[in-house]
Length: 139
Image (cartoon, rainbow, N blue to C red; front, side, top):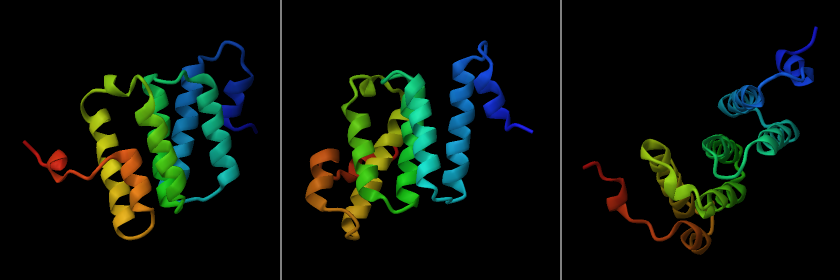
């Protein structure tokens, strides 16, 4: 019996955004269960990014899940690279509300990783900027 996602892959009339959504859920599954299978994760990421255009909402969401995967599996340098790629996107400033705020929180997390010595502080500050506690206070 075929896996459900693979069944949809061979059908010519399958909506590709549905496939991206299913693959994104698969990536989230690996991340949440802390399953470190870098080949499968890279395959899922490449599949999603092959369909999505940079700057689309789904593109940001895929990278957010991938960022979590990188941090949960201890690939902090890669997480920093993902963060840099996302905030350099011309569409980053168009993200609204909690989607934009999530990335600000992830930047704070990178500062925390630098504070405990898991990342180079200078490198983090060059990408994220200086840590400003006021950005995280509720108004």
